[in-house]
Length: 118
Image (cartoon, rainbow, N blue to C red):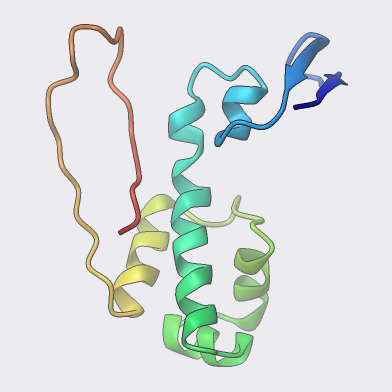
């Protein structure tokens, strides 16, 4: 495992241990799990597109967006996508998306959002 020094405009300088499964947790964000929602959805979409061997143009047609949007999605530039839109893409790719709302455990101070791809 290696460590890196980081300096960003949002976080103080600190050493970060690599490599957990959540880069946002590595960077010290308190809402690290929620920040992974869009990347996890995008990963699932990209894996499906790759498994179907769709070109960017074919994927764009199937999802009803322009090819530049698919290019952004493939490169994980996700600012232009809402969670809802990504879930709509998954249903357009013949996937079911299920959401479960439940009471958080007492051991955790706040609720959280998790995405698990099956």
